[in-house]
Length: 382
Image (cartoon, rainbow, N blue to C red; front, side):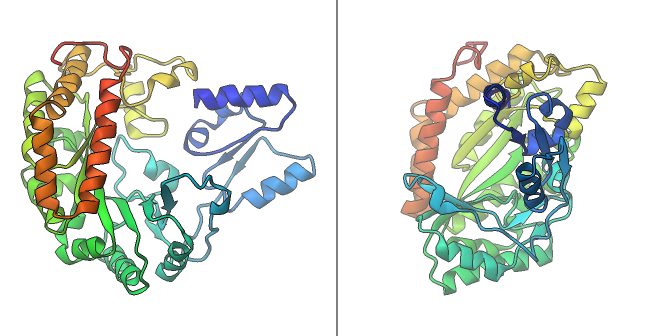
C-alpha cells in the first residue's frame, strides 16, 4: 500500500484522477482518501458503473460503499485477453466469504461471513474459455465449510472431468476437506496438483487463541492423517504456518522443524504473525498497546509477514527470528531438503504434482536464502 500511495501521488501531481479500492483501502478508507480522489469500499462490481458515470460527469464522490455481490445471480468475467500472454497461471474465483472468522484473517471482515458461490455451470463455461494450461483457484476455500458446499465442489470436479477441461490447478482449502476421500479423489482426477492448507501451528492453545476452530476440531494429533489423505490421491500439500505467537519457545521451533520434516508436508510456508487492518488481531494488539510500529501509513511496509511488528508475550522477538532461520535452514539443508523432495516423489506418484512441489520449494528456498538482513535480523540458529 505504501507503493500504491506513492504512485497515487505521482498521478495526482499530473492532474490524473485517482480511485483506490481493494482490501486495504476498504479497511482504511479515511487514510486512503489522503492519497486518492475517491475510495471504493468493498466489492467493486455492484458500484463500479456508478463510479464511471460520475467520473464522466465530473461529479466523483470521495467514497462509494458497495453491496456484497450475489455471485449466484451475476458475475462479470475478467478480460483475460488484456493480460500478457507470458503468464503461466490463469486465475478464476468461484466463491467469496468465510464463516470461520479467524482472528488473524481479514477475509471475513472484507468479504463477509456468508459463503457465497457461483453457479457450477457458469464456472465450467469460464474454465472452457481459459487458454492457459495452469489454473489458480482464488477462492479462500474452494471446498467450503458445509455438506452443501462440498456437494457443490463435487459437482464442479465431476463437471470438469465430463467436459474434458484438462487443466492442472491448485486450490486453497481447510483441512476438513480431507474428511471426504471421494471429494479429494475427484479433485485429483479433475487436475488438482496441490492444496494450500492453513495448519498455522502444532499447539492447540495457540489455535484456540487464533480462533481456528476447524483445526481444533480435527486436532493437531491428526494433522498427518489429513496430509496422508491428500497424498493417497496424488495431491501435494502446501502447508502454511504462523510463528511469533504468544508463549512460543526455542523448543517449540525445534519441535515444529521436526514436524515439517516427518509429517510429509510437501511445500512449507512459514510466516511471522502480522496484524492486518480490520482483523480481530489488530484490534486486540492495539487495545493492549503491543504494536511496535504505529506510524501509519509509513509503517505499513513493516507489515509484510517477515517482521515482528508487535511485542509477544512469553518470548523475545529475537527468538522468533532465530526460530524462523533455524526451521528454514533445517528444511532446506542437505540431506533433509533432498529427503523431503524424494519422499514427495514417491508419495505423490504423479509427475505433475511433484513438478509443482519442486518448483515451489526451489522458489521458497531462494526467497529465504536471498532475504535481506532486514528480514533476518538475527543470524543465530541458521
